[in-house]
Length: 173
Image (cartoon, helix red, strand yellow):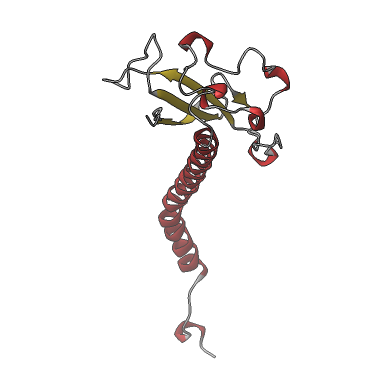
């Protein structure tokens, strides 16, 4: 058998091919790594949004105020004086302003069950009266509008999702 006429690749040709292939593939690894990181960040935003929406829906399922004809003064928003906040869970809240100042970290279900799978997240709520003309202005007196803000944070507060809504006190005459 004549080695000079045999068909195939030499060791040098194979090494050159491997080097060229490596030079082409290495930059793509960085692109894939960035894509994986971006996908993880997007997933955390979706989870944060879902946790915020869950709490917002829970709050909105409560009545506007303890007594819709005699609204709670702005400086008394939160659990009523006869309600002991230290032993309360959201299950004990009967109106939307009871949630003012509420914080749960990690998040809890309405029955107080801790959502351990979301232990890096925390949720906080602010409830305040807003003016009838501009929902961005906090009112100093009672109005038929309360702005509810739910903020979910993660990564030690570096990332967050904020949901805001303004329910109205509708009283039939």
